[in-house]
Length: 71
Image (cartoon, rainbow, N blue to C red; front, top):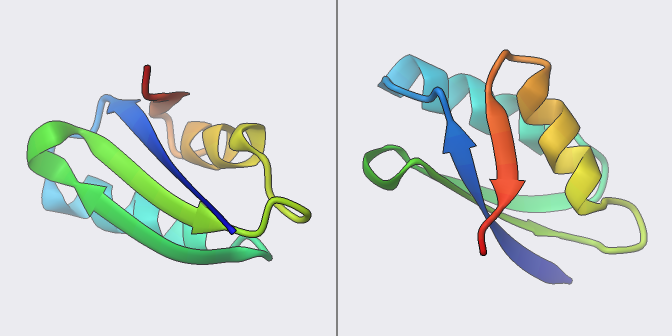
C-alpha cells in the first residue's frame, strides 16, 4: 500500500472536496481518501498494483480540477 499527497488546484468549497473524494474512492484499489480543503491537498492510500499517481490525477481532472503529486 502506498500513501501519496497531491496538490489540488481549483478546489474552493466543501462540495468540490466531497465530489473529488467520492470520485477518487471509486477507483478499484483505493483504500482511503482524505481531502484537506484548507490546504488544497488530497491524500490517497492505494494498492500500487491497481492504482498509479496518474489514475488519481486523471480522476480529479474529470471533475475539472488539476492535481499533481506534492513536491
